[in-house]
Amino acid sequence: MPFHVYILFSNAANKYYVGSCEDMTTRLAQHNNGRNKSTKAGCPWELRKIESYNTRSEAMQREAFIKKMKSRKFIELVINNER
Image (cartoon, rainbow, N blue to C red; front, top):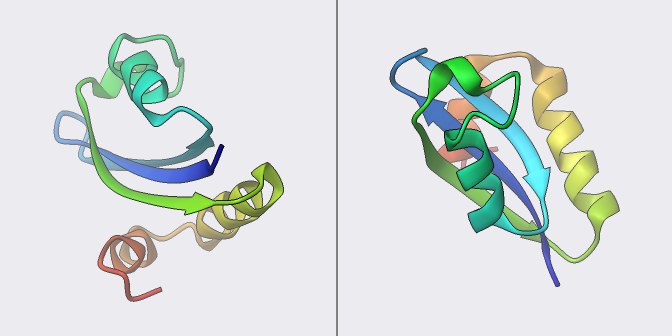
């Protein structure tokens, strides 16, 4: 089963959230049901980007790289397939 890196956007909070998971449908539902402390205030969240990887390690490395950039502009480049 593939592992995913995803980027969510909240209009309410006007911010992005980057994460990784194995089951995207369940994970998005958890974010929108307030089950994640860091995204609870931003509900509802919209899926803006998903990337699939063969291993959890690859997905976690990509997630860490995106988060390390600490840039909204960089996240938007990733969403637009420019990074």
